[in-house]
Amino acid sequence: MRDFLQISRVDRQKFHFIVQGFLYLFNYYKMFTEKHRIIIKYLRIKYGDGAKKIVKDHPEFDWKVDGVRHLIEKIDATGSIARKEGSGCPRNVRTEENIQAVEGCILRLLFVVCLLSCFYLYYFFIII
Image (cartoon, rainbow, N blue to C red; front, side, top):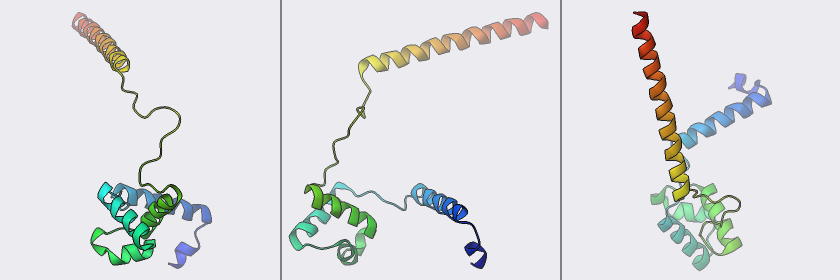
């Protein structure tokens, strides 16, 4: 432990970043299902419960205090559990035109790969 305290601040930040990555990788931070969001909203609006009380009273859900606190802040600000409308580029760019364009690119790429492989095979048999 003493060696850890002697590590520079930048190294500690890197270590913290790596640990956070592993926590996300192994699903330590779980997303709330729609059912969980509705339950938390009901408890917040009906009884005015805070994040710690909700987590303490419902251990069967394995919620984290920070996650519930974030959802409560969203409920207090908007009154809704729905996802905020995104801004900028639409999330779904899978239009028929784009699908056809990607298929065309893949077909052209396959054609070039086949031509190159035929060329190399021909060249290989000429040398032998």
